Image (tube, rainbow, N blue to C red):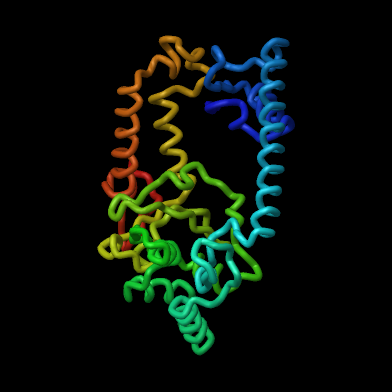
Amino acid sequence: MVAAAVDRLGRNVVDCLNTGYKMRDEKKMLVTYGHDGAWNPDDPADENRFTMEAWGAQMELRAIQRRNRDATVKARAAGRPKGKPSYGFQYVRKVMGGKIDQVELHPHASEVLRNVARRILADPDNVTCSSEAARLNRAGEPSPADHLAVTYGKLTGGRPWLPQSLKNILSRKAPWSRRSNREYLLTTVALCGQCHTRLYTQTLKDAPPRYTCTARNKGWLQAQHCRPAPLINAHLLDAYVEEWFLRELGDGVNGGPVGSKSGMGSQTGSQLLDGQGAVEDEIRSLLYGGDVFSVTRGRVRGSRAD
């Protein structure tokens, strides 16, 4: 495991020590910037330094949390909310540049939400948050982020409506801010080879997890020609990328210490960049080339070629 610093492994002593000892028990290397070589928890000097840096990370976190709480209390007392107005609402100031006197409904944004809610309630079997998000994208309705940018006189980024975002707005009493606790190897990393948007994990009760591109179904303009959209079993793509990574860069255990001729440390910056381009080409051929997986009916079959 490679990290920028010990405080990036965890934000308290327990998390950092658990990670360090887990790496030791599994015979794996733990490397951080600023430390010569890999950490050795069995060495007294390394153990003391690792614990002190973890303790410093915990104290830093406590200070940040205390400062944020104090700032929130002061901002509320002075009429200066820390957050920006939620979609459908706007702040009202009686004096320009003064404190916020009240929060009221935004005339246009609130009507957009009312219209969406009416359409879903009128035909819940056929009208969903996904279909409404796609309709708003086709109609050119600014997304919450772009609407906020326009409100404050900033340039819009052309960000689309997302079904989950629309669902969150319509059910504010139960916010959906927590991410999935089932992380996969290529979560937030794998991209669609046709529309270049992020691949998402699709889970079903009767099928294994799969990576798929859902941008066209969401009505994103850059994905209107994404046919067929890739769909591949997660464990197949994970295994392929892991095999390539270990073959090209080494596993960090049998490859020798960092900086040796046989380990990952022997790779130069240009070689690592070339390797990154190579793995992107390999994944693209895996999804779309048809040599390893065949694309039929908008899906990538999971059968391996001989």
